[in-house]
Length: 354
Image 1: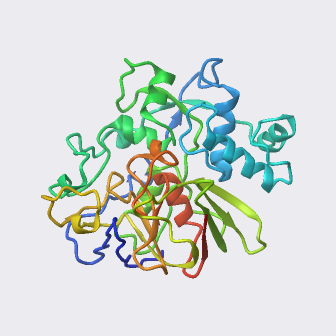
Image 2 (image 1 turned 30 degrees about the vertical axis):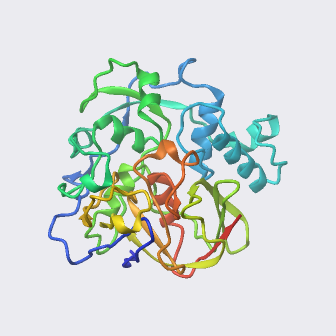
């Protein structure tokens, strides 16, 4: 496991206090050797006509293959079309962004899963921990020792790469959520708990709670397009192997166009909030150190760049990826950021283009 200390960035200042924090890291959820975070399929867990639209099925498979549509919601939006176009390009098809017959054959071949699954919520997952009164203002987060999910609904949404609203649509607003209950979710598979040496900050547990496998193809080059709102991953043969939607800067904090490299990563990082570096901060805010957690300002991971003060990171608001502005850095959903972190290495080339 790679471990690095991230630098700061103009509007998202980050420190990873590896060795300077006393709080215990999240621990892998295993009892007697059994993997207690696996979501077992419930009886009668096949597709339903209302839940298993063709678009949702395509989103699930695109997500599985590394061509992320952002949140899986069954909607034919721009991020879905960008993901389809990238998949088409990787398979030598015209990049139309449309789910035509040839694309369906390339996408669904060997992917014999339905769009959704009926699963049983594991008791360990239902225990959280959840931070139900976690505020949304960054400056108000310092009094919490873990910036975890506010509810099981939010945790389930991230685990299955979707939104609370989509879960409500699939299950109904009165569905009871608790350990042992059955719910319908997008067909994001279970992943095994990774074995990671020196994993003091619980990265293996984070990966499993996000449904992200530790074993990923290796990235040689990353290209971030400001105009497209995408991060593309290429291997050593210069083959496109993944694409993720991103948020990339703003007029106040523009994306630094140019060629950079990855200097390192910090998983489940702490965060140093400095209002002097935010153009839109409240003038009464004070500098504060914030604890790790998926609802922290940079989500579950910080990937440090050779451009001083800039990085690639997760977000506590996955539904806003590609739809809002950032403070200069490249922001992904937590599950896409975690997957990217397993693909890159020190020295991976990063290209920022207009």
